[in-house]
Structures are given as C-alpha cells and as structure tokens.
Image (cartoon, rainbow, N blue to C red; front, side, top):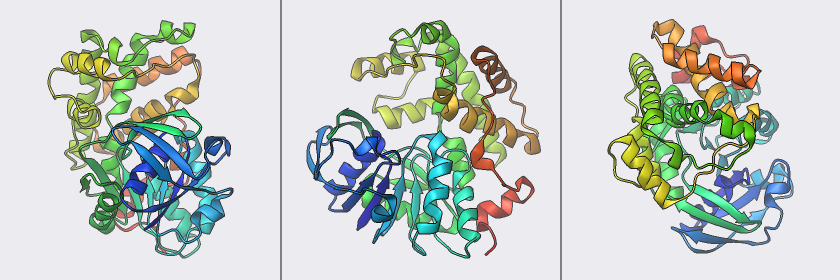
Length: 349
C-alpha cells in the first residue's frame, strides 16, 4: 500500500519507518519543509525497530498525496486545522485519512470540508500515535516504544472497523474500534498528566530549567493527575464510552507494568527521558488544555457532568500563562446541537 505521511517531526518519520518495515511504500511531507531537511532516500532507524527505511520525500503536498491509498496526518495540534484545510481539496475520493493522534473533534472538521465539495472519505481518529519516537538527526529516528493497543474511531462511525483493520495492516499492533470519534477525544490520557505536571513545576518551566516529566511524577502530582483523570472517565461514561485510565494508558504506551502511578513513574524514568516544558509558551499547552481539558469542559455541559477540578486547572493555567488557552480552532463551524448525528453519519452531502 502507498501511504502519504503528512508531518515530519518525530511521529511522522517514526510511523513512516514502521509502515515501511511492514512492506508499504511511504511518501513523507513536511508542512514547513524543515522537517524533511537532511532526509534523502532513507531513514536510519534505531530503538525497538532498527535498520533503514526507504522513503520518498515530497517537495509539496500534492506530490505526497498523488497515488496515495491512505493518508496519515501527524502534525502538532496548532497546525492541524491549517493542514486539513490545505489538503481537503486535494484528497482523492474515498481515500482514508488517519489523524494520529486526533486532536479535539478534528475529524468532523475535515468531514465538513469534504462535504462542502460533495466528496466522501472515511476519516480516522487515532487516540494515540502508532509509535513513540524521537528525531536524533535529520535522517535518524529512534523508535522508543510501540503501543500494545491503539483506539481508533471514524467519521462516519460505521467505518471504524474498516479503519481499525487498515491501521493494523499498516502498523502491526492491534487497533480497537470505538463507537465514534468523541471516544477518541476522551481516550487520550496525556492532558490530565501534562496539566498536573505543569501545575506542579511551573517555576521550573518559567526559569527554563531542564527537568524530566517522569522523574517529577511525585506522589502529590500523581494524586492530582488521578483526580483529574477520574473526571475524564466520568465524562466518557456519560457519553457511553469506557476509555482506558491514566495508568492503563501509560502501561500501553510506555510498556511498564501497570500499578500505582508513583511506581510506574519510577519505571518510566528509568527507561527513557521525557524532557519537560521550558518557557511559558502557550503553544506548548495547546494539546493538553485547548484540545483536551477545555474541550472536555465544553462537552460536560450538555450531559451535566461536574468537572470542578478540571475547570480549576484550566483557570489556574490561564492565569499563570496570562492568556486564554481555550480557543479551539478545530471546532470552527461545528453544530453542537447536531453532534450525535454528525458523529454517526458525518455532514450531509
């Protein structure tokens, strides 16, 4: 299968290498161009997958998409909206588009863009990327871990099983289909842990100190994260979703035995570094607050789910950062009153 990978930070090249290792052809494109700098015809791969992976570096997105049988979009959350708007007119009819990881309700945005043109394509929402990776140099990527299982949902929802099978064929691990893309938005555990860590380490962040996230998962931080996570799990249940807990998510992604969070944290800290934020850049919090906690608060209103600790976390982070962190551009034009129907059927053509 020919896969177009849009995004060349760490996840994109890592996912590309994984797909190539399974016999697929990959075209790699960077929205700003810099991500593919230094990549020729091969990626040098280290870590849990080692060797070389032949890739085609596309100089523009049209060439990346030409002939693609599937598209994987893995760009930072602030870039996701612009990338989806850019590629929508170029996507071939019926070719699946996978967002890895999906942010907010971005699949509905892409579905609406396609609907305006009277076109169809299943849009997949991965709750987590298919690899945990880092870039060591221009053409060197280290794959730190492969998740044991990844949740995936689709717009329209009936395509979930098909996209789960497609992802399994591309990347190898099992993919669990969810009832709808809202489940993928609620399945991500990273926002609760990230928010707890940031709240407990803001002076380190502001001073630009080097610090490791796993090493700073103290018992107090773990308690805060678990309380935030409990509100997320309650919200998911109110929408009919049974999503993995924070501990289960860390087990899947980090490969450490599931247990008390402080014990898992010590195992994660010993296995690999996880550098914390440096500097009060609001963009660094977008994935956790804008497209995570703030989205959940908005979803909690119609189901009357109390989320006081989540609301407090967002308010305190906004106060410390001195700016609003809740403006979600991926919800632009979304009709929340029609959300149940849109999740199942997508937008009218």
